[in-house]
Structures are given as structure tokens and as C-alpha cells.
Image (cartoon, rainbow, N blue to C red; front, side, top):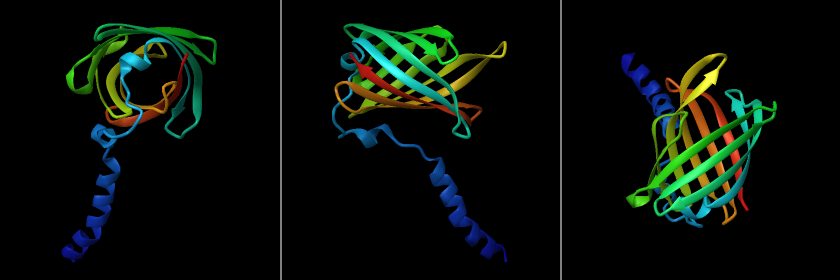
Amino acid sequence: MKRRLLLAAAPATLALMAGCASPDIADYQGEKPALDLRTYFDGTVDAWGVFTDRSGKVVKRFTVVMQCSWQGDDGVLDEAFTYSDGTTQRRVWRVRKLPDGRYTGKADDVVGQAEGQARGNALRWRYTLALPVDGKVWHVDFDDWMYLMSDKVLLNRATMSKFGITLGEVTLSFTKR
């Protein structure tokens, strides 16, 4: 009886484990056009985005105007957010390009340091954000995936989680001027 239960549970366990697997940045090694943050995020970049809750409902819409510049391997990405409720926010990223397609970054509302790696047309960017909610500050984890579609268009999908539980997703479309 125990053996039958174990044999019956094995496929479900494997399916559950496969569902938890995430893509690997190496999967995008051969994809074109190649993403180089110094090239794409240079000058003015506009973005349109939505935040959706766990059920997929759009909770907030926003636009972003970014002013970006680089000095060698050090970049500044100055983001000005305007939300659908009329509120605004600013985040200034200080990004550094490292060997092997790796990047690090800091911003005032980022806890510690963001880390990312680019391969082919993709970048995986992970960080913890200090997010104010109803008078409290929550530290939430972001797992961003960016995909360069053309020299002008970049798509971004980020999962926001706390204690490993998905809280929602952010979807953005960037257009380079």
C-alpha cells in the first residue's frame, strides 16, 4: 500500500518541482539583438507599465521617463514615475557594468545591492525594494527579466514577492527615443 502511494505521488511531486523551476539566463545566450545596458539605457527612455496583484487584476498604471548616462562602466538611470492616481516618484539607479555580462546597482530605496546578468537579448535583475505601504515599509524582493526586442523596444516583466510568496507582477514596455 505504501509503495502504491509513493508511486502515485511521484509524478505529482515532479510536476510540482518543475513548476517551481525558473528560466536560466544562459538560455538566452544566442538571442539577438544583444542587450548592452550602456547602449540601450543611454539618453532618454520612456516606459509604460502596470502592476497586477496575484489574481492578475491591474492595481496601478504608470509611466516612466528615464534620463540615462554613462561614464565608462558606471551609469546613472534617473527614473521619474507618474502613477494613474496622480502621485509621482523618483528613483535614481547607479549601475556598474562588471565582467561576464554582470551588473550591480544601488538606489536609495533598494536594500543592499541589486545584481544582474545579461546574456543574448535578456537581463535578469534581482533586488530588494523598501516599499512604503499604508505607513509601513515592507522589504519586497523583485526578480526582473528584461528582453531587448529591437534597438528601440525593451520589455520587462518583474515578479514581486515576500517570504517566497508572489505578491504581484510589474509589466513594462520601454521605448528609447
